[in-house]
Each structure stands twice: as structure tokens, then as C-alpha cells.
Length: 246
Ligand SMILES: Nc1ncnc2c1ncn2[C@@H]1O[C@H](COP(=O)(O)OP(=O)(O)OP(=O)(O)O)[C@@H](O)[C@H]1O
Ligand SMILES: [Mg+2]
Image (cartoon, rainbow, N blue to C red; front, side):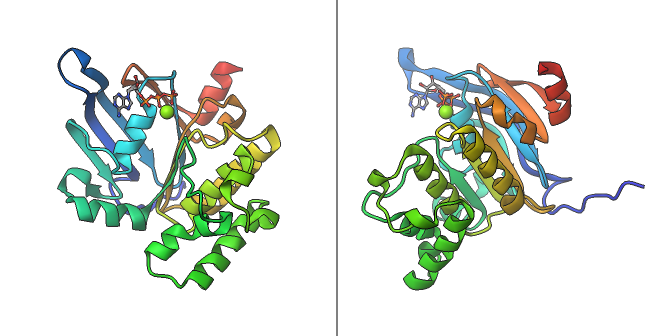
């Protein structure tokens, strides 16, 4: 008999979006980017979001991460309705529970790789020495031990991406959100990072949501949601999708 997955949150979903709408601008310049998005990301799964440029992927991730407010619909993350969190609460909730790898890495130029990766721990009150040591351990797992004391402007795109990964994973967040995590990486490094993401970020009570254009990493997906012009048009199981594109 198949074992039932015990999940915190809601029936196995770490993220539940219902009818999510978002527009930017006003009047003639108003752009309706999300037009009623329904999406779930389940615990214990890597959920991929695929879609053309401009279809609203980063906008949706930013809303789920609590960085951007939606106009309509509901967003539930780890059992909390985001609309019910006030500004300060939302920031704390995000710091504690959500790791975000941004499409642009957003590293702090004046901090070394290890210090950048340690930022969430410092914000949580860790001592600098302990936080940096922890960051170096994670950077070592990512093949970056020798670059830990280097400033971001001396790192390649792929190296910066790995620092961004370390920063997102360092607090073992329940939800990891990655926007194009492998776009700056070569094939083998991209695969390594995805394997690490599976190993480090995924367990029965954690979930990972990944936006990608990179077909080389689709084999890592448990579930694939396709977005087009601000709506989810299809959701497939990873295997099903692979067979379809083969
Ligand atoms: N802050 C903003 N103000 C105005 N328009 C915005 C803003 N952010 C995004 N947009 C617009 O919303 C649309 C969707 O943008 P979004 O970044 O979500 O797309 P995407 O699917 O992530 O694209 P890509 O694959 O190129 O990263 C685009 O037309 C973009 O120009
Ligand atoms: Mg984007």
C-alpha cells in the first residue's frame, strides 16, 4: 500500500494560488500581467514553472515570496494566507521560511561570497564568525570553497549563481523559490546544482518552485506547470512531460 504523505499545510500543498491577478501601471499604461493564476507547489516535490519571456513568471514568484502584493485572488504559503500578513510580519515570515534565488543574483558588492551567503544568518542574529563558517561549508558543497573570500565582481556568472544558491539554502527554508537558477551555469554545473537542490532543499515537509527555460534540467521536475500570458495553461507530471517532448 502506498504510504500517505504527511504534510504540514494544506493537503500536501506548500503553495496554493487561486485566481491570482496582478497589473502594473495605470490608465493607458496599465498592463495586466497575471489573469487568474491557479497553481500549487506540493511538499516533497520540485515544481517547475515554464513559459515564454514576459508571461509573468518572475511576477508570480515575487508574489509567492511576499515581495510583491497581488491585486486579487488568494495566495497561501506554508499554511499562511499572505494577505493576512502585515508588512513587518511578511518580511519575518519570508526570512524564516522562504529561500529565493533571483534571476539577477542580487549579491551585495562589498561582501565576499561567504559573507553574501551568510546574510540571512546575520539577519537572524548569528555571530559573524559562525555565520561565515556555516556559509563556507555550504559553498564547499557547491564546489566554491576556493572562491569563498572573493568579492562578487571577481566571480563568473556561474559562481555568483552558486553564491545566490548558498544564500537561499543556508537557513534550510521550507520553501525554496528559484528564478532561472541554471541560466548562467554550464551543463554539468547546472545538473550538479539541481542535484544539490534536490538533496538539500527537498524533504517531505519542504517544497521547491523553479522557473526555467533550461530544458536540460527538466528531468529533475516532479511537476511542470506551463504559464502563458498570465494564466496556467497546463500542469503535467515530470515524467509525462518528458515523454511528450521526447
Ligand atoms: N515592476 C514592473 N512595472 C511594470 N511592468 C512590469 C514590472 N515587472 C514586470 N513588468 C512587466 O510584466 C510582464 C511580465 O514580467 P515578468 O518579469 O513576470 O515576466 P517573465 O515571465 O519572468 O519573463 P522572463 O522570462 O523574460 O524573465 C512584462 O511585460 C514586464 O515588462
Ligand atoms: Mg523572469
